[in-house]
Image (cartoon, rainbow, N blue to C red):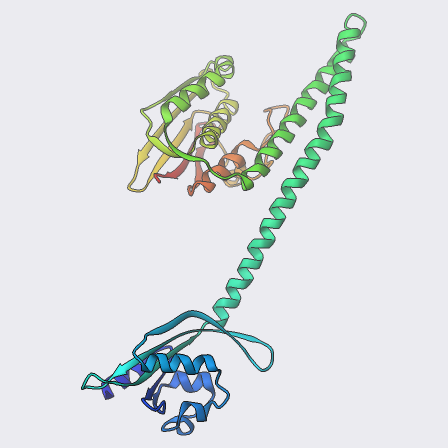
Length: 354
């Protein structure tokens, strides 16, 4: 018993040993710290004398343990006299004498108030974040609706001007109308991008297993016009079976391929899609021979609306890479880039197998 007591003294939880009559026979240092009572005031005394106002609930627990039951609670809340609450993790078990008879009970108690308060705080922060995301999504929808309506009106009247006064408009007016149509198209792309981005937080991933090769082939058909305009060459090796949201992961590859097509001034832009299989994930790479990225911009390119070039030089909304990043992270992966200015870029990203 002396050996066991030496071990119990070192435990980080409060421990008390009571005999059959519920008299204290042993307590460790943590017990005295948690109860603010000295050993001399406890040892040899009955627990109900030491704590005369002990709740009836605990008296029942003590009796059940004396009858051979093992009882425990992962968390139990107690109201203090000052109105504050404390959370405890406890266990009450019988101990047996050398003859095998129940000699009393052992109480083990661990104070988990700090951990519980942290959990409550985190839960509150998560709820606040969810409310904020919901409000942002509603805001995005309202903005999109309020912006689309006047935008359609402007586009309509611009079209009427271009058609009805086609033969009488001076060259400068036609140039202004062309700029107007370009600006409207850009704003429409921004609105669609904002809606798509806001939807990602609320979208439940519809995961399934699917082959990636047909997805890439379909994307090449969708992007066929751009590919031909740029005189591009896109090739890929045999790609694996993926598990994830097919529509969203297709969007990732489309955004990365489109990005590589856009930022490429070579006579023959080349894009190479390949992968490596690891134990629990796939590592993908979309590689190009484009304009590359300066080292200090490698992280900033994934920021929402981040543009490194003026719209007059490269069209777009600055959302493609941020949307791709968000989708990849929602699947439990990550994305990064390696690049040499004027030589090309390699966009790497991981996706779990399951």
